[in-house]
Image (cartoon, rainbow, N blue to C red; front, side, top):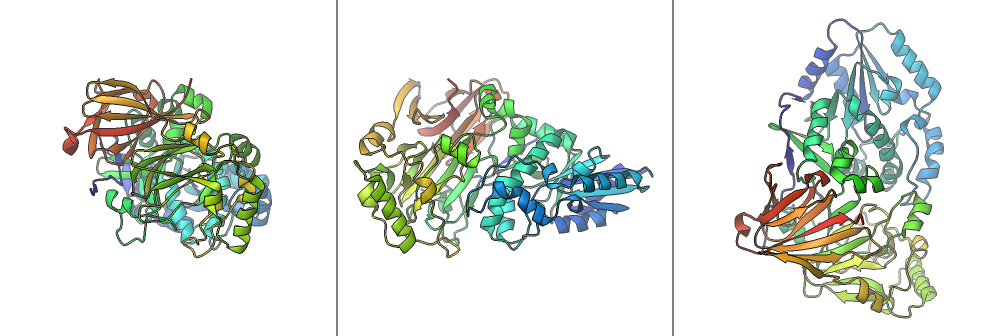
Length: 584
């Protein structure tokens, strides 16, 4: 059945601050000029996240702010060759992988040039001085007005694909998307986020230019209060969808996507580092990275125990992998915790699981190794396939398991795996999603017409060779046990493996069922039923409607909440799957 009520643009309604948003460049300019009028010297900092349309933003600022002097932060940065030298140890020359940087914005700047620019600001006898660009707040750390131009991660990636933006300190719009993304992931976004976290409390305004021709300026107070309100209630982040060489057709109907697209391979629907958060101030919607809520309200959102373990990071990931009428995913393996720490500077790895939202009659999951697999021979065959293009005989080495709707497969790091064709997977995992070592890609090309990167050198160092058919069967396939039930509901423990830090619970219900975060972040998806209502027993938040296949977050501070069938689902059995971090 086609269910196309899926909400692709969920908005969190913010109470109050109705007059705190200014839309359009003219209104934005008028608001800032009103704050700088009076004949007094005013220093305006416009700090920019990587990925803004910098040249366009500079021209708009000149037009609407009419500053008497403009200081661009890029002229205080090191020269491009020096920045590439400084950042090379983290960016590396690997095609895909780098090292999670420990650099800060300050490390990209020439201290002498910063001091010189700061002194120039002190010496200028002008009414309005605009300091603009990434690191502008390093040059003028105590401005009269601090504006932060934030950017959504997915929009940055789209701009990279269109050769529209540069990486930090570089003029490299024409570099490949692959090169720009790697630099963004391992370097730029870490550096920008560190500065963002340092300055959030200082923002007088946030500037949303994700749609450059429809900009919005919102007061810093309103943004901070909006984030506080967000984490006191269930909410959803903005999912995004993309095509791929193995992509399927299921999400087109269920999520009401563009029917003219050849396929949709995946959807990121809960990685706050990647997704956006839409904050609704009366009739105006402001888009911010949802990671801002994690940075600003980590304990309330994550809970004391999760925050204590992970810091201001969101450790749970939900996404879709659609191979319905498509093809197999690449045969792959994820690094062990020790390997990802030593090699890439991450402190936890991508343990994951496949929950089958739907499945064709021939659906399958490739998981684990044949018994007594010859390690050296398999690696030799994989490397031969990579070099010659000859077909890798997966039937000789890899176990293939039939899969049906509502099956659940645990996939701890180090386990060879991939989803087969005609499957619709809800992937529930820990967050470091980029660290996938592809071993075999079924001899196909990427959407760009080039071979996708194969990472046998990394992969062979982390494959757990004892995970054969018997071990997989006993440990990873449908570890489902009923643990509780009541009037109109049943709760099941569905995994994950004991080596993984995420635990999942499935609830089947035809009546209201009570949940409790117990001070721990919850992430859920409605895996059966058309729509349900999430409510607070003591009316602490407004009722929240969730539709089929939608993912939603329940912050740790919410405590008790109920979920019941609603609307077209009343009288029917529904099901949610819930993930949380094991804390004991």
